[in-house]
Length: 399
Image 1 (cartoon, one colour):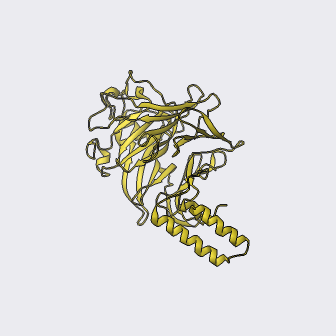
Image 2: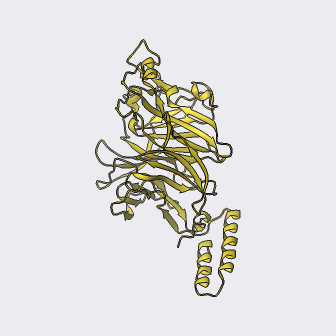
Image 3: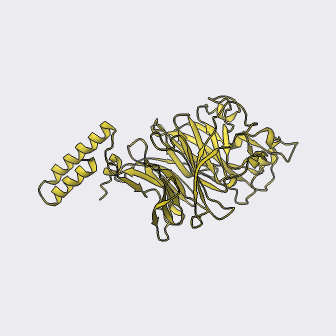
């Protein structure tokens, strides 16, 4: 009997007044402790977690997921993608930790993730002034906001690591200014001239995934239609430069994919057209180690869920660029949303796809749609799933 089934049995005994509330609470605590100490799950029935994707329209809670540490929830509260507050909460909704990045020059936005060491990595928009841009050879006539990553120790609120996209820009239009260079000569750097939106949101990254096995961060950058791979093994000082870290690239991009035209590669085709939800298939799951990304498909107004095999990264530049291999994909003429959305591999090999303005599709390896959920006009951010017997869900007392 699984923990979930055993707990349900005691709940029924409580409802039937065979045991007291005190007896039930003791039994529940024993089951939770047994599950956490063993690290095992015995219930093969999977629960699709729609917890995260319950924000109203595009306002309100933008991320909500069971924390990796098992101690609580990590929540970033955002409005329209930005909001500036990250909280760690327990299972009763009590706020255990709060961190604000909300000033005229910096604001947290879209995503945060808890690292294995308990630290929290947060995506931040950083103001770059008009004067800084002019010095670098860009003349938009206004300030802009570029991407920055910070790693915060919740015990001390100290920023222990950071990476700034501004430190890794290149521009090919103003030869007399800083950062000048041909894009094809600097494929590990970021084109400063790619965007010119008047609102200053030039990159609009919308998701990060941390891979502990390689100490790499994958960032989905929506307005560049790319995923950037960043070396987290660097120090903050090395991350400002083009040297250091496991790949000796410093804070320059270890790899990038989705839109090779941004570094003047005309051989590899663009295949991402706005994108969301970067992730890697976990160990012991079919396709483990492969990369998942949701292509919103703004070019054709039809979304595509991709499973990719990425090349082996090296310390060399990307002059001899190798595109990812498309291992699996799914699309449907009825599946399109130009915002949010994502996908997750299930342990049975199927893929759970979140279509942001519709709901969910569960799709087999053969491309058969085996289950759908219509949210009836609600908006959904990402798919997450958990075993019914997962101790983190049991603590929520869901019926």
